[in-house]
Length: 448
Image 1 (cartoon, one colour):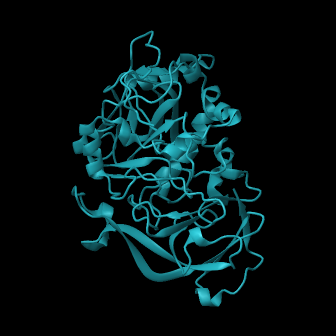
Image 2: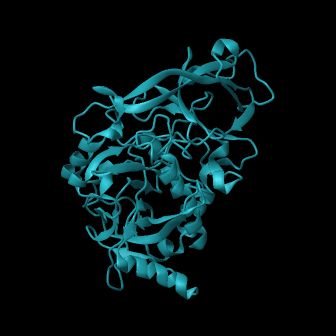
Image 3: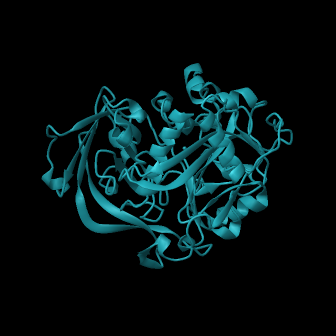
């Protein structure tokens, strides 16, 4: 419990501090950094043995309704690390398997300004993000301005807090993350809540005070008030552990640090039509899948996620900057016709760019010569008001959202997919592609 708490204190502060990143994030720059569900007899968790408390929820990401995703079976090792063996409270109290239908929106529809999809790249999130962002209607109202409610009956099997900024190591007002199980294989989560209900906080604090108290989780019912959010967005994701994303070709790379990532599913498919339609009206991504996409690995090309050799895959070797060895080359989450690169070893405020060049990343293979791309900064905006970022004005449903590329050249990146499957990469700041002819000793090697 305490180790998990530390991890959230690290990771979610990143989400808080890194959304300020300059590049093409769909969130405000001042904030940053996871088959059909129609069955009417969806299995449920064991009924609570005591009074149900209101609890904050958090949900997993993209959906395996894609046939190819359903054909992949997690290995026993991954299942153990990422699932029930990792969370005793979940293992002890769950029954049944498979997804359930949600009955409530995480927030009141009228309290949501807009929703950003899965797949953004910003700050410490170098690989496409496995959760979406519910941007609140009015950030100026401050903390605790908006209610967060349980989307379905659930067991809150893990709670994380963060009290210290990862960026500055200075104290900050507490944020909360809640992981919730709906069956033995289906879970959701909320993050960045500014507070939880007193009952939830008291039960969480009791296990810490006692030291010997067993954490059995907290039961909540659909529609219960579990907490509040304000001043920034609410994270939301959904995960189905019976499915595995087909476009993350080395699932073991995520097993230690973010094992839920490979099981991210589209949450919209689990909401009733009325709620689904209302939420999709707030979604700023217009192309399918509307929820976004995070798995872009294509064997034999440079597309997808990569990890620098010797940096322990997704986990990293420096937990204060675990993303330093991460690299991604993937379509932009808002405009997939644009390719974006995220480079972990660059400054967190300036580490993701649109790449412009003559060759599509899907066309580059081991037979290709080293390829260069221009690096350009960009911003998510409303084309009708191109000089204003998206978050400057209240979002109007039906508004077309796009990506503005700034003309200034940041530099050039050279990539080379080698015969052994490794990717060689080097960044040349302030240089044009014509000025880059070969790699230097600063080049790095990536694997996946």
